[in-house]
Amino acid sequence: QVQLVESGGGLVKTGDSLRLSCAPSGSSFRTYVMGWYRQPPGKERESVASINWSGGTSYYADFVKGRFTISGDSAKSTVNLQMNNLQPEDTAVYYCAAATSGVTDYDYWGQGTQVTVSS
Image (cartoon, rainbow, N blue to C red; front, side, top):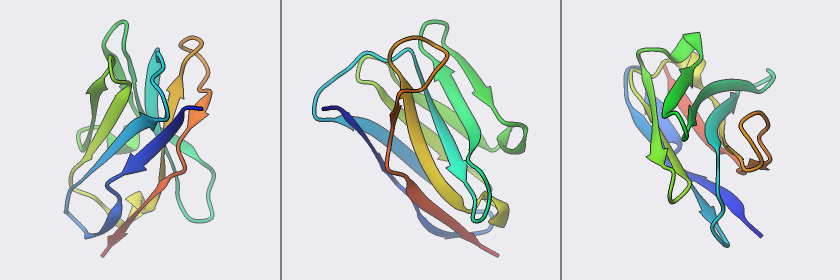
């Protein structure tokens, strides 16, 4: 069974950078869209960024535009999130997601990786 595994989280200071990575384990699968979500403490999960392999288009939430960059390898179904100029409000558990049946619904999720930004 395929699982998504995130890595790269940690504790950083305001203004620092982190790079999150996500890769499938178990076996390979074809993905149409991959993305990152996050869940801040006490809040609901929210979309951060996504990438559509067929068109090579990317989406970013307004609160990360200009600071975060999503990239990856469609052949390997891996996705990265480069996070620059991190702020305390970026503190959250970050989840990787993959859509394997189409471009509208994510059907695979990672277990999450904690990102904590201290002021």
